[in-house]
Length: 241
Image (cartoon, rainbow, N blue to C red):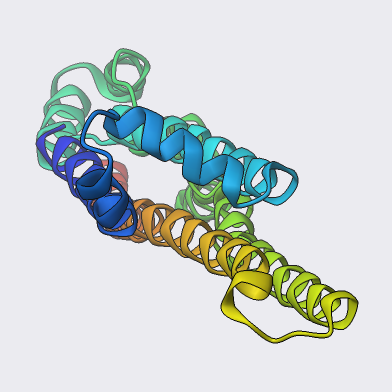
């Protein structure tokens, strides 16, 4: 859980650091305004129609990331202890005792062990096939919804850039109407362009941090699953002799 806290803290630091940089000048000029008020003002200035979509992408992405982090941390198992317990149970009480150990242990590794033990009477080859097949099922559960998180990572800056293009189009429309290229005419459109880009990039950065943590966590659990599965097959071969 310490890694989760560090990841969340780092994401928060990046988010608020980037926002603080974007509004620092505004805060200096208008010291009476709070950070929340300035952030709200920037959000409105950036065109809520696009900023709102980016915000939804951030909220949905964070919801998926937090759900995955909680699930993956609950799925983490001390595989060495589990293998030792299964080995002791096989030696003392046979397959049923080992299955009981797996039933009382949370996580995908214990579920894979149970499937292998449940088919050991059909032969080692069948037990190994069950372990491999159910391992693929558990891997799919570990990676569930991660593709949606990667979608939001790609979507957020694209939405920001779309806001940028629309803001520049608005700026050129104002130039055409006023027949003047003075800063006052184009400032509004350019501000929208820059703010939407900034918020889109900030969203992508935050979600990317969580995505990388989740992927590394999945890889770690999968490696433990594969290693433990090999040890289980070795135990079953030893038990059947």
